[in-house]
Image (cartoon, rainbow, N blue to C red; front, top):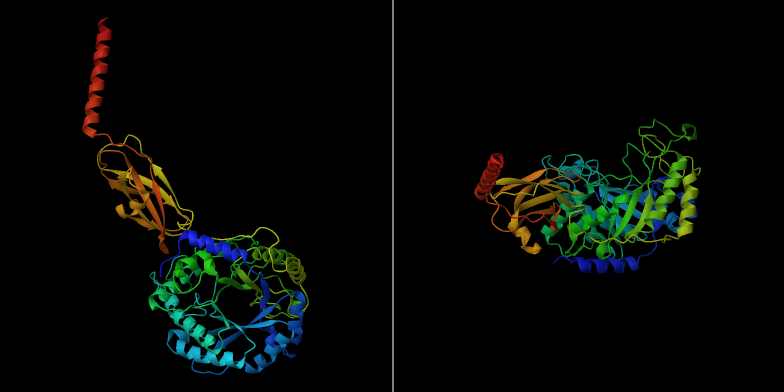
Length: 507
């Protein structure tokens, strides 16, 4: 299947932006599942805040079709529904060592997931996967030498999970991946893979599989700050190849690069983003029932409230966002865990609970200002080239310098071409000139012998994760001068100057 053209992509993007529905808000929290009253109080509190869904974790232990914690789920699911809260299951194999040793199989996961879906017909949305770009949840990640392994091993599980759930009910919504927002700068690390590189690897597996059905109905993403430092403002960014809430454009581009032209939709063709874990941890008062010791840099409750207000008003103006779930509605008790919720561990309200309630009511999940539509890039992000020293070029072999830059990793081609060469023909005429990492400005050069006539140094920058996205740059045109002729002319001018000086001296 051919890739969509940029014009068609723009038309699709504008269509889906115009038909954007309200964003729903919820929480990713198992507190209600374990509550003595089956979660009745917990879910009614969520509903009062204006939240609409609760994500519960349901892990598969490889080798069994048993549903873990079934007694808790049997109470929590109907309690959530009764309170008007939509139950969502986050499902994935665990522990990761059993993925690595082959004990966990995609077929076994599908059988188990089929049983779960049949047991809980009230649950109509599933998140398949939980941060499979981290070795905490999926192994192996990479070979340590540049090759990503996790994308190709996770793909079969996501596909099998999608098929199993749709077999129970085509109306089930399958959200894929549940990606962590951050990973190592270079691909193939053993511990963690960036979300951009993971999607690239997953897309490579999907294309190679020749699968003719999608992998997911929506993309689940966890854009929380670096877990070691929650003192950052709402405006913080990670930089390529990771992504914060402010950098969702990078995730949209990665989805486009990975799946454009396949049966799997991208955000241009209707795929929605589900921000299923977002939270800023705050300082907790041990007297309220917390245990342990804080192990990360936290923010204040007042700052958290302001950030959550900003967060809601920001995401409702992104037409591709369908849901946002705060990571916790009640805090975890152990301080080494997460304290980013709207309520403390004793159930008392933080300032953020009121802030969230007001923001949801004020917006109704709809943008109150200008929306932020997005269209895929056709060139590397931020691509630019500076050319150096293109005056008095001699017709002899020499180095031609240039300095490229881009906001993502790129491949470089460069060479001399006639100034009249059509831009569309230039990429095929150039030689490889290396590559460089995002946000660098490496001084590069091409050594060549200029030919006669007007010429330019042409440089092509291609996105490493999608070489079809290219940018073409050309230096100012120049006409090389013949070195011998130039030397002869220079000598003639010098002789004339000497003769003039001699004649002047005789006067």
